[in-house]
Length: 77
Image (cartoon, rainbow, N blue to C red; front, side, top):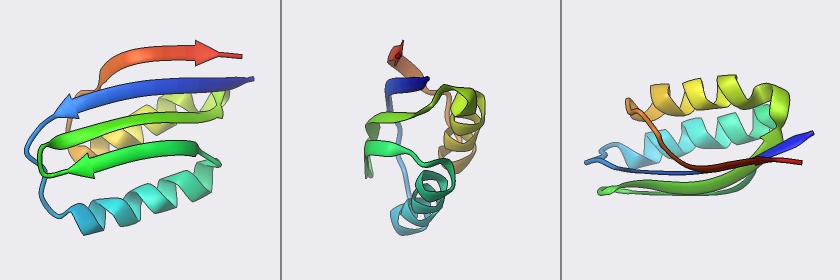
């Protein structure tokens, strides 16, 4: 089963290049598909992955960006 997870967070972000490296690694290790837009003003994303990885992926995103994520939608199929 797969999960589609949409989220956003407005927050001043710095060190975008290093955060991108962490995201690249997270996407590769967890076979994540989708897009996360990161900018100085925050992030916005829609990603898909195997459902059993949901908790780890959310924890990783919170750790990388030091945020609580505003859940827009989650859909499993």
